[in-house]
Length: 93
Image (cartoon, rainbow, N blue to C red; front, side, top):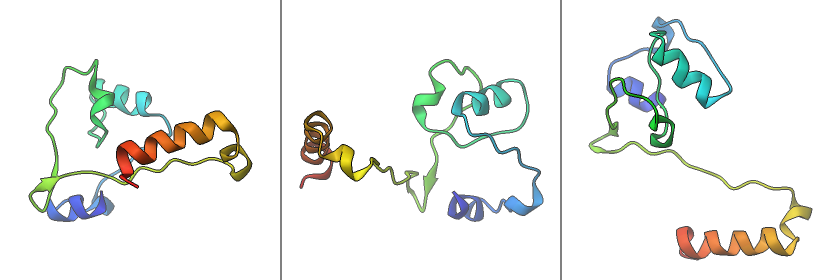
């Protein structure tokens, strides 16, 4: 996101920010006119305001996503099966 802000000539240090740890709260702040946000598309299901897909260096703006779990949890058959499905479908491993 920092690279996108720089590309758009927006300095994050020149803006007041509100940090929230909940995506729904973030969207609600914007809905009520309290600034703007960069959120994944899934957060926009019930948002009717202005929205625009972002690009970075003429490529769709994406961010790295991680699957995380405790090592002992990964040994559980159901969790391991889910992980294997993700690997086959998305990681081509």
